[in-house]
Image 1: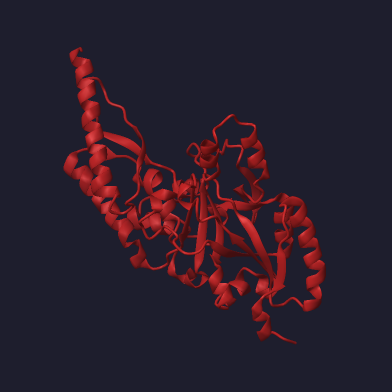
Image 2: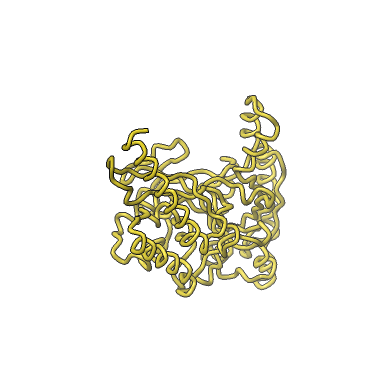
Length: 350
């Protein structure tokens, strides 16, 4: 082995030791189940690596053991209009829009700038284009009649609907690039992120070894689960799908489409509600049963459990709506979806 080759081997070994130490000392106290999926670095011949770019495994399991892993029942309510609900049934999918389409002007920047105040809005907006979001609430709050504010704001003051969705618990930790968590609203909720970032900076200073782009590569998804306190009454639960792209360029993924929201270009992708297409693809693959089952678990099998009409609907409205919903759901999803009026109706009897 030449001296140059030997040096290169030693440098890689030293780099990997730094990365392993970073994982153990910096990242694992924050995300105990995070695992490194890739390490990339460049260095001149004869000179040691001064840093590396690392990425953690893009699995929802990376949240396990942290406060961001959702441990409750996976049954939620998503507020929208009746027209949107019928379009969801027709498309057999829910549109997930990127974070630039959200009403909160401090979306993502609230958490990012708590770590790096100098980060530009332009860069943060570019990151927002890679994060696609479905906003929901814990269904138990609906059962306990605690979601009145959400009905007023997101359910068109009782004229909209609540779509009840269930996610599979058995595959939750296996989802690929898909994450589910409560949203946190208090400044103190950012404490663990700030402690992580301090450990990150201390590590660089102590070891002279830089872990590049820690926010983008390690905690971007976590940063999306924080909002400013004025939105606390929403009690939001978020389902995120991360689709990366080249910086400051349009998406080239076939999964991503574009639209106009509030006169502004946004991107969206789809959360499928019909598994039959996936099953058809798997049927044509010469994979073992175990491998096909592993693939199934990468994508959540989301089911529409029920459609709840807002409190401004009348009992006489239910029949026609139920007929249309059942025709669409039976034809497009393969099962019928129950329709009822919100129990908040008892407070709005005419």
